[in-house]
Image (cartoon, rainbow, N blue to C red):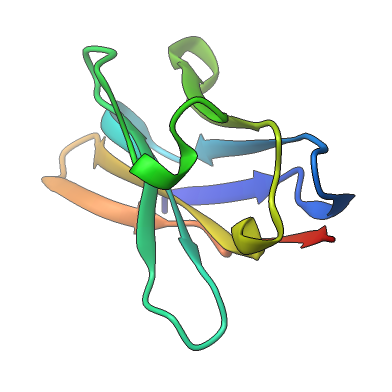
Length: 120
């Protein structure tokens, strides 16, 4: 059974930084796209940043120049470096991965989420 476990969330003042990590574990054959999404209270979940299996990047306009996504394929881990944080970045951040287990087809998996709170 594949699991995605996030870490690194917390409370930070506006202008501060946090680094989120998401480690995938299980009977993993290959991982394709990995991404970070967030959901603020009363709002829909939205894409924050995505990194493909080939290393191509995509991110929301609201975080361009402030957030950087990266991955370590040897560790099956994706990171989100968040700088110049704003109160509007407050949300639960979720990791997502397109993962293939041995003998199985491709599936999308979600982590349990980690809270990021930015105080003004």
